[in-house]
Amino acid sequence: VTEAASVAADEIIQIVLPSSSGLALPQGGLAGSSSGITIQALTGKRQTEKVLVTDVQSVGAFNATPSLYFDPPLAGENVALTLSWQATINLSVGDAVTLWLPGFSGPPDRVLEIETLVGETKDKAFSG
Image (cartoon, rainbow, N blue to C red; front, top):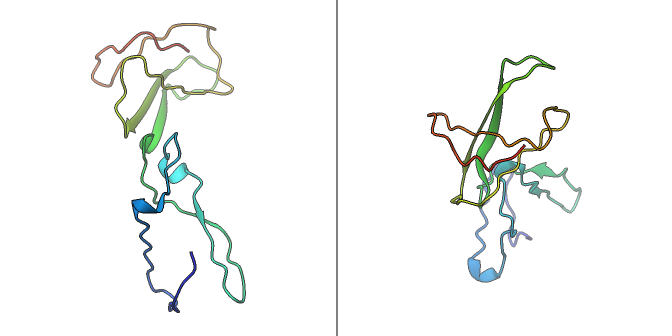
């Protein structure tokens, strides 16, 4: 995007690109602030550093930041794990959500029983 007119410092600029432009979101959606979208300015005198755009709408992914908690929070011990997230799409039977836990240990190929915060047992086909 190139400015067609001068813009004073500290002036807010908003650019609207209509859907007729042909720009399409990635097939996998956008994971909000972790999407890697950056902005940079090139002026006649210098180029600014790239800045991460942190306010990005999540699309077809997770809304906000997923959170992960352990009880007890003790290294090397067996723990209860609580994973919370809000999806911006419907999840149906047969859909998969994968959580990678590098460095963790546990029984291989074990089927895990997943419960919601209200205690309703979910599909036991999740595996860990």
